[in-house]
Image (cartoon, rainbow, N blue to C red):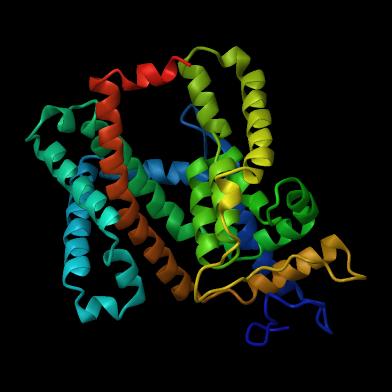
Length: 364
């Protein structure tokens, strides 16, 4: 089995020659282990628990800290301008390119939120207009504290995420735990990687993995919604930060066990009740279903898992194609997600800062 003649991912039966050589096995093992080290392995760095990805993102953030609010403002203004252009005029150079059309030809609701985010960013950066927008505790938090983290984190994560998703690790883990995840959660086994990434690394990474797997046809709309809402929980690192801030370090173990038990209970119950139960098992149009985790008769779980992982690793896109996809993912988050965070985050913080709404909601 060579790179050019590797069999499709959705084979029902093992290939006639189900062997693989050492080079093909290493193409699966080396990138996947590197992905585990960067995304799933907690490390202590500079006195805090984080992951390798977090260390890289923090270093980038520190080197660009003075420029990041201005960069965020520029990205939001650019996103709103092209959104208005694409949605109102629909120029041919935009509509004929799928990626650009998807990013800038918007539904009125999303266009409105994108423009609102850009307006809030400009008001906060140059400090004009109502103070409830640009106050340090409202728009200032989003633009100067949250946006820099998102920009640097997703830049690094988007570019190196293929190590975790495109070199067979999800196929290997999915095969091993598919029965448990199907019966307990009604999900593919590969969603175990999303859960591990969230619990051990970062909930943000879990969401990013889930979104990408949905776009590639490995999850249906229902499965992606269930995974994103139930498995993107507070990570160990974030929970340590919270308990330390609240001076409850000595109660960390029972605290996090409570989080895990509550999270697992929710993951079992909520997919079976509305609104998640209303979601349909539909796959992205034009991509279709790209997953099959059934193990053929006569093949062990471990052997079939390794074989599927090796096949996936040896049919992955070229490095140039993976960089292209990674850059697209980063741009999609910067220009699509960041404006929503700025718009909704600023309004939410203003409600919390200037009204009693959240106090009322917290009484029950």
